[in-house]
Image 1 (cartoon, rainbow, N blue to C red):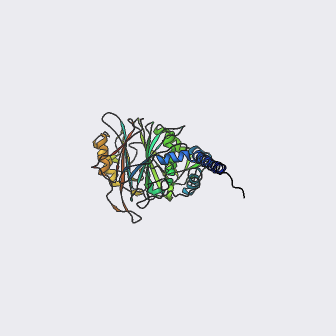
Image 2 (cartoon, one colour; image 1 turned 180 degrees about the vertical axis):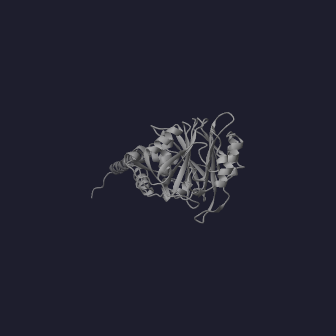
Image 3 (cartoon, rainbow, N blue to C red; image 1 turned 45 degrees about the vertical axis):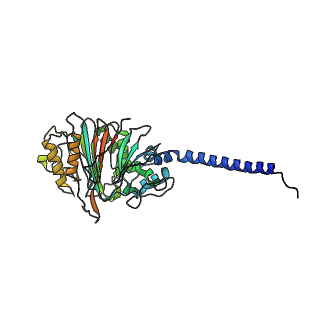
Length: 377
């Protein structure tokens, strides 16, 4: 049998190798075309605090317009299905909002800057500060409890594979601030879940926060947005929102009998002596209804009294470090919650709605330097 010259064999081998290299390049280009934004997002994750706190910059479009166009979501299952199909490329996830025992307030600095303070209280919650910058909306930062996305002490976003579920984070914000100076936080109320049933598009608790941060510059715009949709509470619970903006305006929005109630500073009759007189600009919220009525749903009255008495004594004027001190004063010490789990303050944030900065303290470590972030590039 005639042997092929070595040069010819070498050419064949090189040809095969060349084809394989070309296929790898084509495959890599295809993967980048399909997942380029997702890979850039996951590559941005950074651990900035050992509690832990992570930061992530979301690259590209997370599909909020598509979410609204396809009818929104009337429950967690529908939201999860949209996120799985649109963002996670079929990878299953969970989004779960359990009992949130939290506190919020707004105030003004001596220099006139609007502040928004927020304590997030729950069982151990690894946090993630998520930056988003939609093409047709406002850039924002928001805080996400990674525990709601399936993370915990035994699973953290430490590499590419373990980080995949964080791609759903834009749909799970609990508080945040946008570049227009709007801030919002959500708090649990112990009453019937909100389940509005009209012909409006359906949204859930966290998607409402996402939409307000993306598209609203003022409190009035945020209230008008909420009025356009049917609200459905996440996790079969009920929540209310405190919303504030850079002008110093603030409202608490809550749902009673599926009807939206909007309270401005001074409107709440609970602990009326602490609610302030006409012209007051500050208010607070914890975990009970503030709308006047024949009910006393929820808890956190002690925290509310501490917040309002401090704000009242200062006429609503606090420096940023004093605002963080007030969050520390109403922080939850470790205790057993309604599910028998140890609960405590997981993070405290002071948002400056004029400077567009945020200071984050994790795990009640108020004696340590806060993590500082700015929306100003």
